[in-house]
Image (tube, rainbow, N blue to C red; front, side):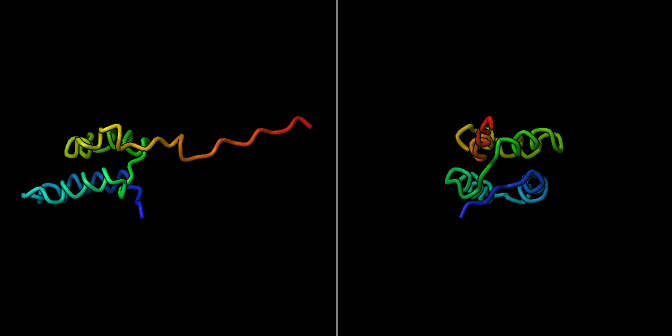
Length: 86
């Protein structure tokens, strides 16, 4: 099962949990989960994360900027069907 991560969660992880992660286990877990696509990062969430709380999520987890991890939202929604001219 894959989970889409929201901006608030990324910011809270960066602010509250990563400072306590002295041995880097949480950071490694997150990096691997995003790489495996167990955790999904939408392009709109990444953009919002860059602007929220001075970009702390992206600053503390620079692997989020890896384009291979980011899922474009345009690929998630089907195109609207064309209407007939009747």
